[in-house]
Amino acid sequence: MVWLVGAFLLLWIALGPGVLLLAAALLAVPRIRWWVQDRVHVSRRVALRSAGALLAVGLVVVLVPDGWLPVPPAPGALAGPSYVGRPASAQPLPAEEVPQNPHRSADDPAARPGPLGRQPEVDTAWYGLQRCGRLELTSTEHLVGLCASGSGRSLRVIDPETLRPVASHDVPDVPDAPDGAGCDGEAIYLDAADRAVLVTGERQVLAVRTARDGEPDLGTDATWDLKPYVPYGDCLVTVAPDWSGRIWWASHAGLVGTLDPATGQVGVADLGERIGRDVAVDPRAAYVVTDEAVHRLVAGEDGTPQPTWRSAYDGGNGSEPVLVDGGALALTDEVEERLGVRFVARDDGRTLCRQEVFEAGKGATDSPLAALGSGVAVTNNAGYRSPRSTLLGFTTRSGIARVDLADGACTLRWTSDVVSPSSGAVVSRATGLLYAWTKRPSPAGVSAWYLTAVDAHTGRTKWGVRTGTGLLAGSDGSRITLGRDGSAYAGTMSGIVRVHDRR
Image (tube, rainbow, N blue to C red; front, side):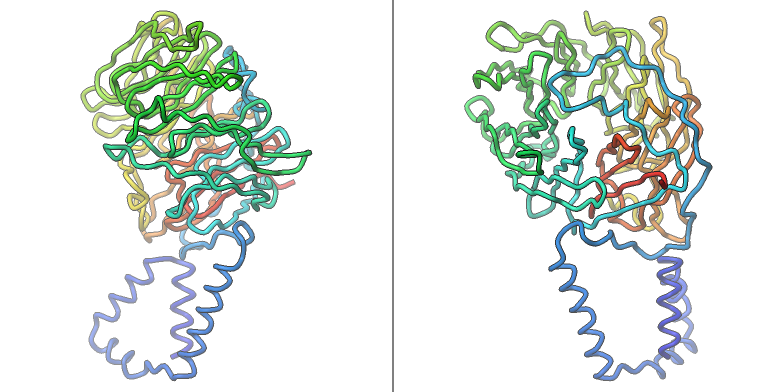
């Protein structure tokens, strides 16, 4: 009987949940069930040994520090391909007209190279049930991750090679918004000094250093208390620097403000409309998307935000505003159950054009747009409500589309059929590829996740490499980050994954 149990376990590990369904179907046959019952006997010695082994595994999981073990795979290792497609050749995209903000760390993330799919290697680090939804890269090549679990949030400095945390710092959690949405607490950026600027659940903005004397270190350098301006029950949803170094922030209830980090002076304006997206900033103004309109604001002499125009749109919004070439702003909206990309002139707020994407009733997005010069790539997240949406091999609606703005008109350049349930695509102008966290449907019930590269010029899928299996291998909205060495990083529901070409 031992050999039968062993064979069953091996098949389950190799082929996934389908083996359990087959076993259940076989046990439904009376003669097979009786045969198994007559032969199943677990002695006390075997039971004690099994319990001891499980206890030992549990102790290892609890005692070993985060990042020292790989993410454990779910059953189904042989149920799907580990690599699809062929390696790509770099076809760089033109440089963008939008300049890099001097008060952000290091370089433009889109200017970094990504993997080309040449014998890609996948490294993982297990962080228990922590999801590091935002990863930023410092000028010293370390990753800074904002990680969250049911027990709270922490800021971590992470070694880019081993994926192990080298410094950790707990930060106050963010409460739920009054309507249960909008306060995910993932607003963060790195300033020119590699400090992590982030919001807390106590309605504060923190500046946390990530190094001291050239070594990784986390400690709060500055705290700015916004409780006098943001009432109890509201929360901060975004922070971003402008070209003067002033910090723009916004609250879920519709407050938009500025913060002078040198003096602590705060200016506030009330838009009276809900905000749930990041703010976009160019050298002259800040752009805020609410649930009703997109607003352009400039800072007055005392720092108080002053609205200069308001451009209303029909339907709901699913993405934060993105700066594109030609003095335009891109965002998404949904009109009559049809998702569309809208381009707005930054100088006066007029709508330049709108392009529908995906099929009616089958398109929605909750992910950032990827800026592609004068166009953007939008990812379809329709059908995704929680990680349970992708259980047992199920997927959501497919689609990544590129929309370009040319001569004041919109053009749908291409639509890809890849499935990226919850994370948006990121672009590497150096390689000319878009990178997305994707999932392939599986009749065997295996949830296999891939990093997939899509040609930004044509929309063709170049390659994909499996990064993990199971529920915890999903990203649940985490953003992909590119490294300067050609690596791609992403946080999953149980750790961090790195994909890079073999060297």
